[in-house]
Length: 370
Ligand SMILES: Cc1ncc(COP(=O)(O)O)c(C=O)c1O
Image (cartoon, rainbow, N blue to C red):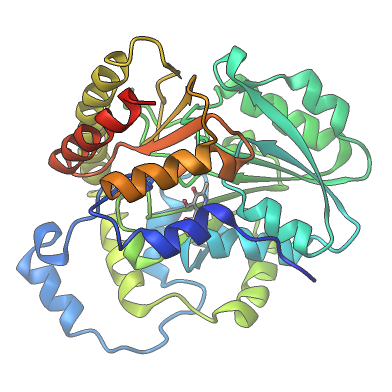
């Protein structure tokens, strides 16, 4: 078992806390406990016993999560340390060396790298810029065979911020069903749609072999809680719980408590509405900045998430450009290279507005001189 370097995460791990401005994030800027919660709830946090809690997630948390997905019950939910763990557990639970997976690109390459490291044969299908970062479903159909054990999508997508429409989700459901494959849908950006409409979840296909992985890190702006979940059929949830016993046993007790509070149906939309408002405002600022480069960038604005993925014309490799910007302006960006797509940059526009403004101002003269 050999894992290739996860370039995006490796670079973030090394640099994100060393730069003045970190525009490598893909979620909205996180708050603090006292800025987000009432004194009464903070008291509850400080007086909670730090036990292991419920290793599958507390009943309150699982109920709150289930309420997001029509018809789901707590038995359809397993809580994890981030959607990253939910992804890892899905692969460990369902796939073995030699199995075949069909995987959407571009994508956050965790599942790709992890599955390949385990010996899974990963085939890719593409979101095309010429199709507004949508897939060609015939391409997907041509790749899926009786050997395909799993189809993986990321919706809304990292890095393009595109959203698959309902009919595409339903069609992917049918393609998976035709060969009995699992669909693993990483939906960690769901809830951060700029038009205010939560996109269709793969859960809504009603297909019993659909798994939704999601979490609080992006749309809810709470990555420090390391809180994620899987929603699927009860039998998969039981199996994933057994794998969870090996990976991390349980989620953090306090993360469970806070997540149940944030995701409660009475409060969930408060957070998401704030996310959408701040993203809409920041995207305007970012788009004006892009325009000031007179066509040097090609940019399809995201439909969701806090990432702006832009192609550029300058004759410089994207890793080199990110390094140059980091060295000369102390601003961290994400290189298209880390997605296998040179000549693109990913900008985290969910940063604090004043930081976004200051960071873009610092980058401008560097790019203008290229
Ligand atoms: C598509 C996608 N899935 C999963 C993750 C990991 O997120 P979490 O913090 O929920 O583990 C990320 C992080 O950037 C992501 O972009």
